[in-house]
Length: 175
Picture 1: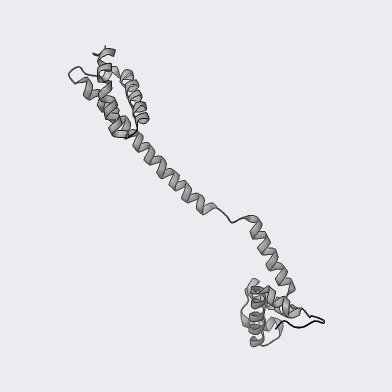
Picture 2: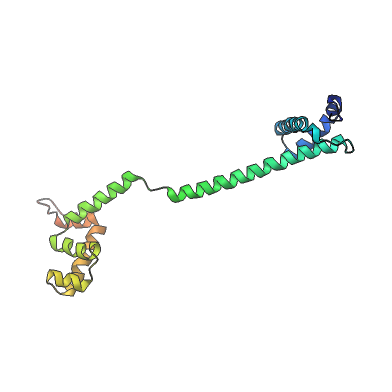
């Protein structure tokens, strides 16, 4: 037998509620905590020793449940933070934007003069040195460097590159 009655528990309820409210600072959470503590007390009635005060035993159960819930919340927050950090590392840029950007670069590359495409491909894609590209194309190193510079500039500024190829017939020049 437990050594206490339901009437004994009812007498301790106001103190349990007051302590729970002091811990949680929320009347609803306090009532939930008291209910959980009472359930735990009934489940573990066999562990109660008559030489201890019932109030101390009940308040210790209440306190331990509160501490356990705070630990669980802290652990959950840390897990959620770690998951959020991991997900940030896994988030890839929007696929559509990447595809559009690659298509734009591909179109600009295709619009380059042949000698610029060749130099850019040999150095930028194939990884050849300036000297190796010059030997492959049969031109001086300075020519390779000049073509590479112009090709890169044209890729960075597509509107300027296209404007140099446009010829306006008739009308006045705005400049």
